[in-house]
Length: 197
Image (cartoon, rainbow, N blue to C red; front, side, top):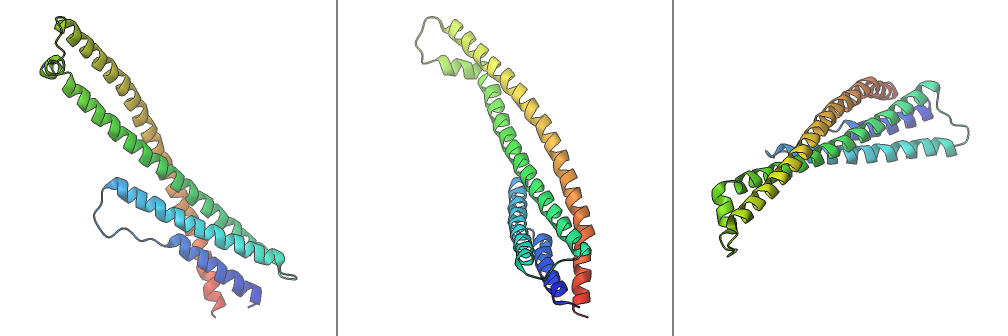
């Protein structure tokens, strides 16, 4: 085995390890925290692999008389595609988390509006205004809350639609990453096994 194959295998193995490292959080946390942890882990893995691949390609570009063969070039390109796919997963997961948080905030506000629309809540809210036009104030308050509820419900419906799309996109992107890993990581392991024989 040549020196360039050994160097190539070590670089790819390092990149593969950083990509395939899978450690879940040890404590029970809510799904949003788990998604944030996964997204952070993937982002770190992607950064590490990107740096490793860049260093690898730069070393070969600078070295005189050393070149990579077609199989190795395809493997490097495949690993770069894997890195980009993992970056896309991280971006989509971040967007999904933001949508979940926004949905939670809107639901909380809608619940508050429903409570504020109760006749007793409206009576309490205008009780200290000291006006002789209390029925008009109550009606204005009721109309204002109803208009806000309709507006927020429309926004919530749009967020739920976007969240469904984002969830589908995340599943598809994760599927692509899994297929790329199944395709390229065994090749890396095979090269490493050949290197040590």
